[in-house]
Structure formats: structure tokens, C-alpha cells
Amino acid sequence: MPAERTYKTRAIVLRARNLGEADKIFTLLTGERGKVDAVAKGVRRQKSPLAGRLEFGSEVALTMHRGRNLDVITSAEPLSSRWASLVQPAAFAAASVLLEVVDAFCEPDLAMPDVYALLDGALGALAAAPEAAAIVPRFELRLLDALGLSPPLGECVHCGADLAGGRAWADVHACGLSCATCRPQGVEALVLEPEDVRSFRAVGTPRGGGASLHATRAAARAIDAFVTHHLGKRPKSAKFLDELAARPA
Image 1 (cartoon, helix red, strand yellow):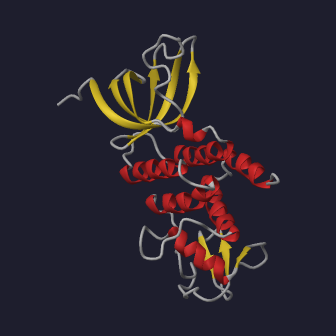
Image 2 (cartoon, helix red, strand yellow; image 1 turned 90 degrees about the vertical axis):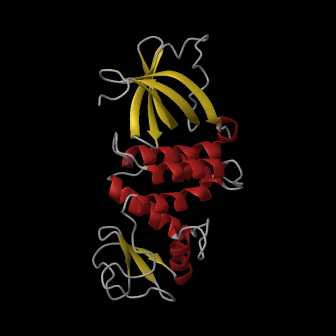
Image 3 (cartoon, one colour; image 1 turned 90 degrees about the horizontal axis):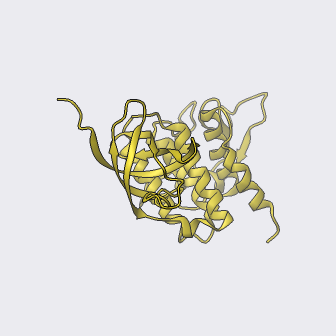
């Protein structure tokens, strides 16, 4: 049976870019189809019914029309408008990292309902988070898990030894933590003290069972290193987050 030309979907707005004089192309994450690009015609005109409804990071209910090259957004109803909570620099920087890494990791037209739910929950948590940056490490590690890229949380990636109670080294090339015996030689590796190892494990644990929302500084740096390794580059938005953290209180 041919696909219906018009369909409805829920989506989170990842980014947008201008097209022509009045249109925009939006990159969206949907639960049913994964990441898709769609055009909103005339959205940059002041009287457009779509104006202000496709904000950065918002969850929207869309009516779409299948096009030859790009699907067309014909209507949009906000479900979770988060812009008011993202205007603070720290929250905006953290949200930018979340959306950028999802955009970079997710393939077009590949359904990822777990990633959708994870991103939606993390963006919602930013509104109530006293420290927005604290959301990022747990999100990134849980995202790697949803993508099948998560490093082992509590054992050496090489020999499987339990890392509880001892030091560990972040071995990005092996995509996991190493024990003292298997630690990478001849390269500078990030050292995690026992409390950092516990934090790394807790941050990557699903809800319940000792999960934690906050990573130690070393654990957060290790997670950032794993994400950077898988992407082949560090997310651009992370630099802004670093700059905010370096500012005096």
C-alpha cells in the first residue's frame, strides 16, 4: 500500500536553517521515523501560523505532507514549549549540547524511540535543574547506552576485572575504563580515583539501582572524552558550556 501523503507525528526541534526569503528547513527528531528534515514554508513571515511554534528544543505535534525531496510542515502545535526555561545562558548551553550530540549521532529516517524519550526527559529536567551543566554527563552516557556504544560501567574493558575500590583509566580507543594492569601505556590517559569510578558507574545506571544525576569532574571529563571519540570531534556547544563554567561565581 502506498504511504499516506499527509501524516501526523510528534517531534523535538533540533535545529533550523533559512531557505530562500521566507522559509526554513527544520531538523527534527521524531519517535516514529527518527531524524528528519522538513520545510516550513513562509515561517519567517510575521503573520505565518507557524511562527513561534517551532522553537529550539521544543516538542511539537506536527501535521506533515510528504514531498518529493523534503516533507512539508503544514501545522504545528506546541506540546512542551521550553524556550522560557532555556533563555538562561547555562540552560541554553546545556540544551545546545544535548541537541547537537543527538543530531550528530542519529541517522536520518531510523526510528529511535528510546533516544526520543531520553532527550525529551533531559530537556524537561533542565527547567528544574539548579545546575544545568550537571544534566549533560548523565544524558551523554545514557545516550551512548541507547545507541549500543556505552562503555562497561564497572569493569575493565580489557580483562573484565571489577574496578570497585580502585583507580581506573579512561581508555578512549578501547571505549571503556581500564584497570592498573591494562591501562594504556605510552599515552596520556585520564585517571579516575575510586570516587570517580563510583560516580561514572552511578551516572550511567538506569533510574533506580543506585543511579545518580551528578558526575564528579573527572567522571564528566571521561564521558566527554568517550563522546568526542565516537563523534570524531568535540561538540561545538561544549565550548560555550566550558566558558560559562570558567566564569567567576
